[in-house]
Image (cartoon, helix red, strand yellow):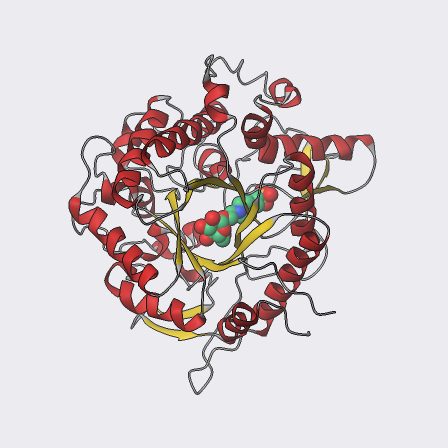
Amino acid sequence: MTVNFPPGFLWGAATAAYQIEGAADEGDRTPSIWDTFSRTPGKVLGGDTGDTATDHYHRRSEDVRLMAELGLGAYRFSVSWPRVQPTGRGPASRAGLDFYRALVDDLLDHGITPVLTLYHWDLPQELESAGGWPERGTAHRFADYAHLVAKALGDRVELWTTLNEPWCSAFLGYGSGVHAPGRTSDLAALRAAHHLNLAHGLGAQALRAALPSRARISVALNPAAVRARTDAPGDLDARRRIDALATRIFTGPLLDGAYPADLLADTARITDWSFVHSGDLDAIGHSLDALGINYYAPSLVAAATDNAPLRADGHGGERSPWPGAEGVAFHRPPGKRTAMDWSVDPTGLHDLLMRFTREAPGLPLMVTENGAAYDDKPDGSGAVHDPERIAYLHAHLDAVRRAIADGADVRGYFLWSLMDNFEWAYGYSKRFGAVYVDYATQARTLKSSARWYAQVVRTGQLPPY
Ligand code: GBH
């Protein structure tokens, strides 16, 4: 069956500032929590840091030409907060803003729609030293920062995303500690989650005040496609708990104007949630023009029968990123796996798109990230063949197509990632790119998946598989 994606569908690829820019000490940039964290021995695999990353800061024009070669209609990137507002407060850095002005101009010159994310995990270290996301003031600092970026780029950027995956910022950053700033406190993680929600709400208000009315505001969540291992009540309850902590802790305030009652009950041992002030939920609700969904893999849970420890985020950390989910065991979903050891299951993406179609009727959806890591290596001629990634992308795009056919209003798809990059706690050991990066020379090579994706973008349809 040949099916076209809707006209105007945005075909894109995504990156994030700390993962690609490098130039950590250039311009007025100060350290972010990821500089501090990655420079701390033992935190990132191989001791890797984003100091140089893929040197995108210096290779911006070459990288935009690559995007044009792929025929991308859109590019999702993030702004480094400590590059454009070095201390996290006060005036903007001219040098910092100039970099993003030049990037956006390059994109527009090539007919590529810029999709700007304000926060992809690189909090200025000075704000962390003042308490970070567990402190309410950080949400206000974020709104000021949002205003400053909107003033600088609002004349040429229409699509704005406040936060990328606030779950990771809160629960990996402050709960399990496998991400920056590496704190391990259940209470701090829950406070961080609320202040990230509040930052989104106040940030959206600041954007509306500064942007022309055509601007569109979204947030990119990583909702869990979580399944119960059986229909036994204990397993279904495990599923409910993880769904609350992964997804409804964000969509509750965003879509329903309240935190879910079961989440409050599950976490009552940790907090009475008195850090939620009156008025906060009004600021957070009714703030979205679109919802971004990042999807990689499903999770499979069950009641822990034998005191099985909670699996943290698949990386070294022994602490759980799931406060209040004691008694939940994570199991390995069946099926094929990527180099992250995540299972390949596109039905999770279809399910999520249909879920938000039901739960947020009328709200446009966007797949803001989807992709996979594989052990890519150049062959003798320097070509990089990644048939597994093509299979992954094909299957997931097919899931998007099916969701659209089933009534989901999906406006775009962003492959993660444009190029190989700094994969957070895994450093450079995991490659998610459609473009291969030789870190010794910074040479970029299109993988076969990039050529495949270029064809999908050009034709607007999936080739037979
Ligand atoms: C995204 O994070 C990021 O936005 C991006 O920067 C990153 O490079 C990319 O994906 C690839 O990792 O149920 O406990 O097993 C995705 C992070 C990974 C967080 C899977 C949730 C499963 C948690 N997600 N993880 S668990």
